[in-house]
Length: 252
Image (tube, rainbow, N blue to C red):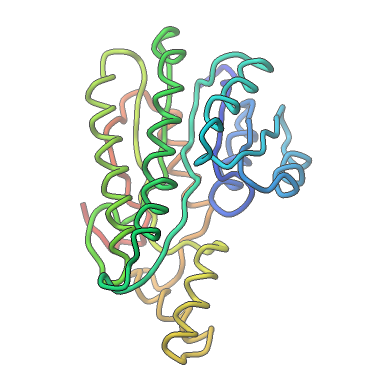
């Protein structure tokens, strides 16, 4: 794209979200950053080369979606590029997955992205341009043990992407998902710590086990995920896709 676009990245404070924000800013776009940690967002904004705005929020809070969009619109105008990155995981055998675990995964990984997408669409459709990219997971493509709530929420997110893309196909708005495997982020660090505590493996052994899950033999980097996001932002012909960034683990 030749023109600077107004972008909003959720979960932007670190990991994949921060990498995406850096990539969008380096490409010349305006980037609004939202996450719960104002300090992380301010630090990121200070290093971005282009215009940015920090809007701290918990995207699962009742009024958060409206307040975030209202602030971006007040500063710059309607959001043109929405990257739905905020998310989390939980792990437990199915019979020990509580209602609270289930609800937390659905609220953060599926309901909040739905509300953000719904809020962004009127402005995108009105101007005939929009790019929505949801950070899903290879867990949106297959089932794995001990992450039933997370897997269900990510399957739902990919279903939302596909349905929205079909509905919006003639409007100039594209909707895609990027589906990473294990990425070298703080979220994976938490997974490593959990595996270590449950199995008695050292953190190094636990991390190596996750690395072996990818045929390339290593964790995916946040920048590699950001590359796929930028592709979706740049192209008007890619829509309704779940793009795997997983080192070849899921061939689809």
